[in-house]
Amino acid sequence: MFKNFKLVPNVIFGRGCFSQLDEIIEKQRTNTDAWAVFVTDDIFQGKNLEKRIPLHDNDLLLWVNVDDEPKTSYVDQLTRKVKEYRTRLPCAVIGIGGGSSMDLAKAISLMLTNEGSSTLYQGWDLIKNPAIYHAAVPTLSGTGAEVSRTTVLTGPEKKLGLNSDYTVFDQVVLDPELIADVPKDQHFYTGMDCYIHCIESLQGTYFNEFSKSYGEKSLELCRQVFVDNHPDKDDKLMMASFFGGMSIAYSQVGACHALSYGLSYILGTHHGIGCCITFDALEEYYPEGVREFRTIREKVGIDLPRNLTSNLSETQMETMINVALGLDPLWENCLGKDWKSIMTRDKARSLFLKM
Ligand code: NAD
Ligand code: ZN
Image 1 (tube, helix red, strand yellow):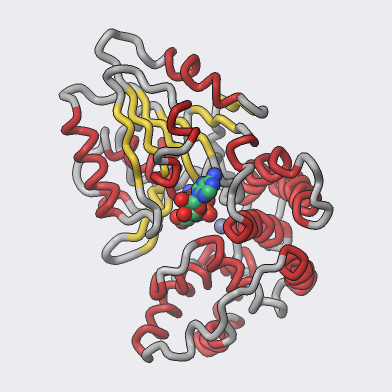
Image 2: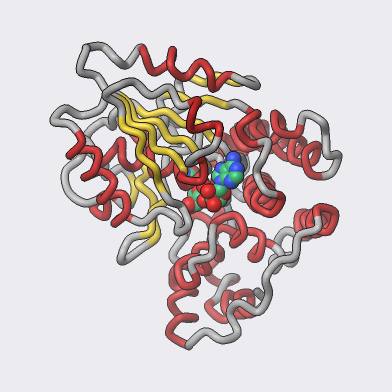
């Protein structure tokens, strides 16, 4: 079966294009009561970007905190807040921030039109009704959340996305000026998430010309950003993230993402840094990629935390292995159909112990 991949229908790109957001959302304001919700990373509270958000009188500026990555309980709480704000539903939900804020915006737009808790929809194609129109404004680039058909949520029982065609954004606003001031560490972690997406996609068994075309271009852009320190690096990283997302959408990620999910589930490690820690332990599977990653890490001057797993209890370690090995398609992409005989529980444990 071939994937019938749903693409983001509208994309605007260019330095300063955030100024066109009002005009873009205006098209959704089809009656006088229409109102929009701006789901915005609270890191921008009091910053210049706050003043530039095109709020109309009836709109809601919903500050979100992403110190913890999105949880189903937080999505449910935010959705309730939006529903209580006015009797009618909003005409648009706009996510402004990194992968976490974009994912929260996607999840809220879905949960406004689908009954019950977001935990009910963690999985593939469980969403019943189309979402409210939703748009993304990335302020951090690398995750590819701006193009993907998922929103990654941690629930009481599992860390799993709301994967559906309805999840895909209706509009993406790519303004490289918005990522100019990201702190060095975060820029590296999220940028390397993109680099790792490309390596896992290009070296996977699900490899095909679609994923290769996007993945190779994205990798080339990542190198211009992190190896060449190109003057247009913000424009380039923004496009690398977009293309990296397109590449994995038509293939899959691999061992690094599978293991990093385990790490994140038990230790709460954030996605970008978690992928970096994990990738550094995977020389056996991605030798050239890991060598280049280490060169970049040294060049940028980033120290990764070590010895994260040595003090875990046996139950925690077992759970971490269960979470990681539960991601069949990622392992199949990395190691082929016979992956279970290669990535045994003991092997997974030994990899975790290297982190
Ligand atoms: P993030 O959104 O979690 O943000 C990381 C930190 O950077 C936060 O403190 C945030 O406030 C800050 N930040 C954001 N923009 C900034 C800016 N312009 N200047 C200064 N600080 C800024 O980080 P991320 O790496 O973009 O996203 C990770 C999240 O994305 C995880 O929750 C992960 O699960 C999710 N994800 C989703 C997908 C998908 O396809 N939906 C793919 C990969 C990852
Ligand atoms: Zn990733």
